[in-house]
Structure formats: C-alpha cells, structure tokens
Image 1 (cartoon, rainbow, N blue to C red):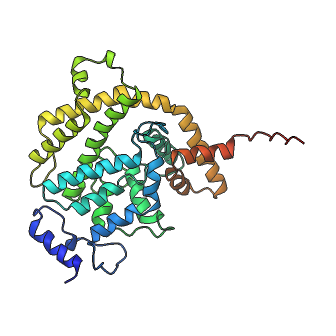
Image 2: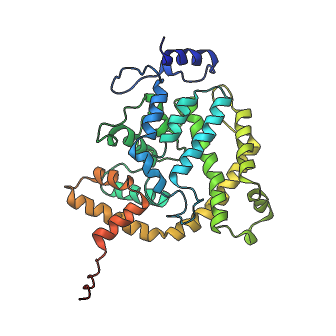
Amino acid sequence: MTIRERWEEIERRILSPQACLSAESRGRERTEEPCAVRTCFQRDRDRIIHCKSFRRLKYKTQVLLLPEGDHYRTRLTHTLEVSQIARTVARALRLNEDLTEAIALGHDLGHTPFGHMGEKVLNELAKKHGLAGFHHAAQSLRVVDRLEKDGRGLNLSWEVRMGILQHSKGQVDVRSGYGLANPSTMEAWVVRVSDSLAYLNHDIDDALRAGLIDRDALAPEMEEIISIPNSQRINDMIIDVIANSGAREIKFSDKMLAYIERLRGFLYRHVYARANAQIEDSRVEHVLTALFEERLKTNGGSPQEAVDMISGMTDRYALHFFQERFVPSPWPIPKAR
C-alpha cells in the first residue's frame, strides 16, 4: 500500500459521510498516473501554490490600490486568510481539508488588477466586444484550465475546478450549466462562506488603518461593531458557522447572519465607496480601456485574449504597461562635457 492509498483509507475512516473523499474524485480532464505520496487534492493544492498566477496575487489590489503600508492586505494575503478560515471550519466539520485548501488557494487566481473596479471595467469591455461578460470566478477557472503552463493548464480535479468557479455567491451568469446556486461539494460551500467571512473582517481592519472610516460620524451601533477586535469577530463567526451547519448545508445562525449583513452594508457605504474614490474609477477605466483597445489592434482583434492578458496583470504592471505605451518619454538631458 502506498502512502497515498494509506491516506485515502484514513479519509474513509475519519471523515464525515458528507465529505468528498479523494479516492472518489470525478477525476481530471486528462488522465494521469496517481502520485504515490499525495492524494489528488493534495497534488492540486501544490500545483496552485507553485503556479505563476498565484505569485502575482501579491501585487493585486484587495481594497486599497498599491498600498504603501506593509500591513495592508493584498489579493494574496486575502487568499491565505480565506484558506486558514476554511481549513478550520472543514476540520471541525470533518470535511476534506485538502480539497478545501486547494479551492481556497485557487479561488482568486483570475482576479483583475485594481480590485472590483477593475473587474467592473473588464466586464463592460468584454460585453462591448461580444463576449458574455467577465467575472473573476469564471476567469479563475479559465486560468487553471487553459492559461497556466503555457496553455496546457494545471489539469486539476473536477471538485477543485468546480469549487473555484462556485466560490462567489454574487457572480454574474457567464458560465451557465455549472450549478452556481448550490456548490457541488460541502468543501466548496465552506470556501464560499470563508471568503465572505475573511473579507468582511480584514476590510474593516484595513479601512481603520487607512483612515477610511470616520468614527465620529458613526451610529453607536456600528461603533460598537467595529470596536470589536478583528480576531474576536473572526472567532465568533467561525464558532457560529460550525455550530449551525448541518449534514447538507453550511450556514450561520439567524442572529449572526443579521450581524453579517449589517457589517456588509456598512462596508459598502463607508469603505468600498471611499476606496473606489481613492482609486479614481474613471482613471482605472481609462487605463484598462486603453490597454484593451491597444491589445486588440496588435493581436488581430481577439477580445478573449485581451481579457486574459489584462486580468492577469498586477496593478503595478498595468500602470507600467500603460505608461510605456501611452505616456510620452521625456527627452534625455545631454551629459555635460
């Protein structure tokens, strides 16, 4: 018996009946020989961590554009926080922690530069040029299926691929037929909940550090909410979702869900609107539109290739690329003789 087979047997003995067993995966698009040491989901996790798209997440905006402070979240640190929360919940519910981790690490690989403003602009550009639209979840699946490894993709297992696609509750319907309303596995459901739990908490933390929240203008109820230490809020939410999740669904208590919705509404009113103003929506639109149109001219008019190129850019590379293409270079001063 190989190490992998031994671990697959352990999964059968200790995991919940609702867990997705690695030995029962629906497999990969291209058949591969199993690894002697790692299960299929462990292999997928490792492939994601070592891919170029994962490394680029460290220079993609979470909320604040190119933050100069060392402690603000980026798309990479957000991903790691989602992974940590999701693993905690999965382990407590006796779900497959390896599958959960792989989905969490891959869920934002297709995100645009400049955060959700970049996503909004790219969605409009895609539709304008005849595509169905753009959403980072669908693009994340495209990254692992088609774009990584020079077009060969990572050849991930079906469960990881669907978990990546299904992680976002609010995504637009650009990939019909995949059952976006209900995740394919309990592990994918855990990642969906953990994604929201992570950003709701760390965005409050970053907004307070950046001075985006005017505490003098807050209602007493919201002042009380944001005054709770970040670690305590996260812990309370994790404990609540573990206690209230059943055999076939991952959910919060009604009281916690109401609290989460108040927190979400507060973030959209007091943080995201101000953060977008700092990013300057019209300028982001100008930069990405110029890059998109320029790519169409130099690439024979392929909108999908333009989408792939721009969504893969980091914030700083997009700005560098724009400056290189569209900002005049100063004439150099002659050297003194």
